[in-house]
Image (cartoon, rainbow, N blue to C red; front, side):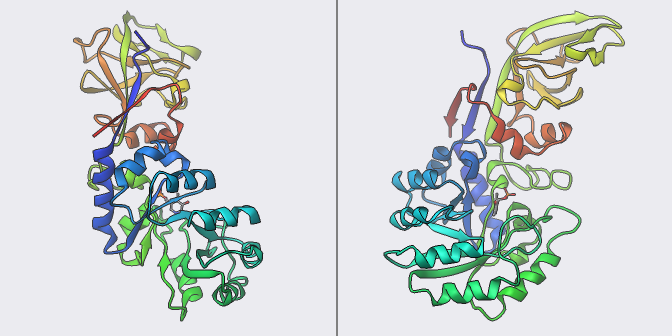
Length: 358
Ligand SMILES: *Cc1c(COP(=O)(O)O)cnc(C)c1O
């Protein structure tokens, strides 16, 4: 028998979550963000689930975008970081992809590439994130050059919010962006999942949800995924492979960081950080054993974690365990481990066998 760990990807949940995003998008068209192998869910699975319902797919990698196109996706495909070198532009044109222009040099690259037709582009403004995008100073010349360039087709203006899920919100960036867009009459794209849900009034022409499509809340401390109508897509399951009793003073696992203060029943789960479970998850991280919530004990090891069976006398070797997903929200595990569901999903290790359902 193989080690009992496995993950499922639920296509019905992917479809549900896109419908939920659409219901908040107020008529804006939806780029399904599928970067990082669809946040660890498999880009092919995302393409299967949303083939007929996405308005477009957004990602970073040119080869992945080409594969998506070759798999029969007809919708626009947006390259969120655009072309890295001039040669990329010819492939972008060949496969009818839409690059983001995020640096003034990329404008020149487009003008000099000898493009065969009119390429649609997204022009990205840096309004405060300070990663990618043109500054307010660079913007007018770049926009004018693109508008005048015979090789450039429809232009959409975009920016990305730094704190749509946080205290600072989006107004400060929105004001700067509106200043740049004023009078252009061009379509716009602003919102990630957090902005889409929290500031629906700015959804504009195209929204760019990622995490919500995979069943994660962009602001779990404020609203859970379930409250937002989102369903778990990835469920990571395993089993108890050992059960034992410990007494007062006995410690559990590496570093002896958990010590029992009374007689306890504990179980060992076949799942560790080499499967993608966060090593930083402390004692008390939620875990579902035999259909009930309990907690982890001590440090996460490479291949195992230990769980508290004090209130689960019926759970023996072979009892089913959900590490995250249906029955144990990934957001709760992520919060306990000081991270975000994005990181859990992306970290699912290649050694974990994946089954597609729904
Ligand atoms: C990743 C990304 C998104 C999606 O963000 P979520 O928080 O996952 O919704 C949107 N826009 C850009 C530019 C991105 O890089």
